[in-house]
Length: 165
Image (cartoon, rainbow, N blue to C red; front, side, top):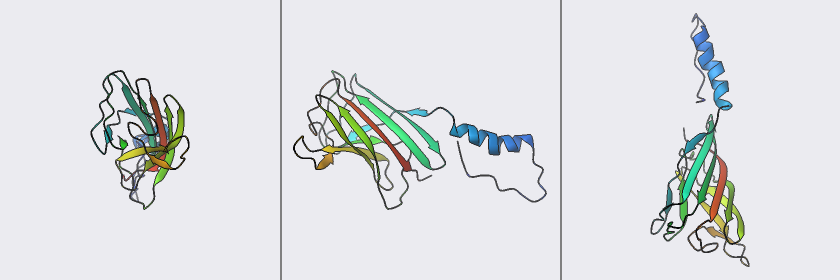
């Protein structure tokens, strides 16, 4: 809820309603519960389908700073598509000429530590992981990278970025 403070006018009467809206409500929004959202899961190739898996997200926005977490658990009817994966952000990133790097953690046959990358002006963000256990260069995650996905695989991603609005 946080937004730009009110511009006061000379001679204006300060009321309880003004103070509540400008001070109390603003402070309360910074300590409120996170907001739930359902991130859209897309790819650069054939689209994946969640099937009986779960995909949940939540975020907290204070001013233009967004802290977001998304969690994907694949199911027995999940199909993985082709290409590199992306997940929708709760709000568009600012176009500030730099990327934001968060954390990504894949729990599958092996555990993989990676990054969730938010590019300038983006509405989606893609996780990147080491290419393999022996090649630690990173590549965007896909159905077989860093390993072939199967039912029960879990992808957890968290990042902080500046929103456009």
